[in-house]
Image (cartoon, rainbow, N blue to C red; front, side):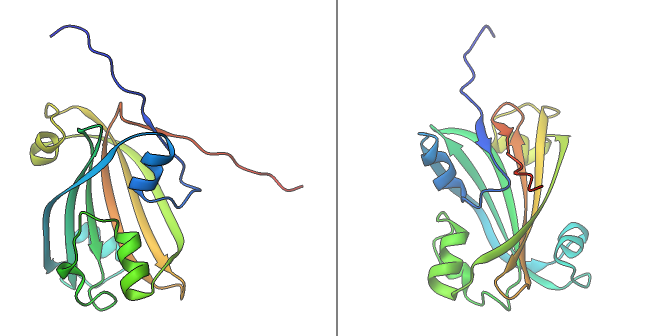
Length: 174
């Protein structure tokens, strides 16, 4: 109990395609990624909807926790189309998927669709973020398309509500 100083939230700009480590470093923060699990599995309802797949299609699922200054701030689940990244699970997935895609598969993100909502942290996600079950969360769903317009992966990010600030600038051309 008592007072504690909450660090500045990470400024998250959906119009910038920076990956987490680069976004953190650009704001003079110290990022770290911990791999929780990575496996081939069947698409659940959410991943099938986001990736526009038939139910029970094969996907890779990668669960990671990301830290700023050793404080867990976001729990990320990626669902990835295995036919586009066949041996993905053999790579070090504490590294940026964006970088792995580009360096090893020649795939770059060309378009990202965002959906931002609020929820609460529950169960293992709350535990991984050292939060009480029921703590408010910012949920960011992203679907990513490659340079050929193919839907290649999606992620669901559960952010501690005090660790993220969504900020963006819209340039209006009249």
